[in-house]
Length: 307
Image (cartoon, rainbow, N blue to C red; front, side, top):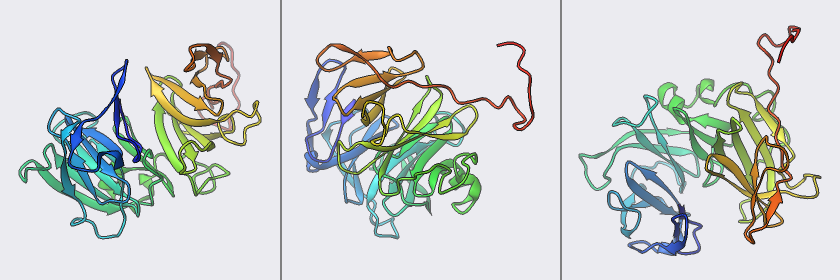
């Protein structure tokens, strides 16, 4: 696990200890975001239009710069990147999309930015403004980016063009900007897939590190319907607990709350817990219920005879 925040020297956690990365080339402490693609790590700093890449099979050592400014048309800076696939699996046709603060998206194919034969520009288009450095993830064969207009699937954008309404990641979003209110338009979004609970989560935070979650939304990956919850946000009345970060650990959603605890969230009742940093186990205080199932033909009455 590689940890970057744009202020401190990046650290690598191997499951036991965390050590600082040893690298040359950029101002290492300024590295703000990164991604792994085809066995190589890519990094970039906030407010810049270039990325740095490591040698094949490495995440540190000599990092080489690749300037994207010559390919951009706007004045945005690099915010986030996400991998793309056109066939639903890993293979030679996989792409990497670099997304800028103004929504400009540049797509490359290949595995070596230092080789003209192994690194080609294959696409460029505009999407709505991305919501911060954690706003993209892969959901099956989709590459979803959370934007000012809601979740956008880059694979569909590449196939249909950015103006096609079908590029919005599923259409069961109700009314309003993305179908849920209130909609925090000033906040950065973190999007991640929770396979255990079958939910694609979107957590909105103010850009300042450590600020509370302002809004939590989710999409049921089976019904493709969106919902909004107040259990995680800063306005929650549940013992005034709210989260400041979220991540996936061993396939389970883990959130950090404002009381300094790490909590594993699930449908296992409120006793579902994980040790806090001091070692003592604490109940999560967060519980989930699965979304309602319309049983097909929503609007038609059904008689449930067995469960």
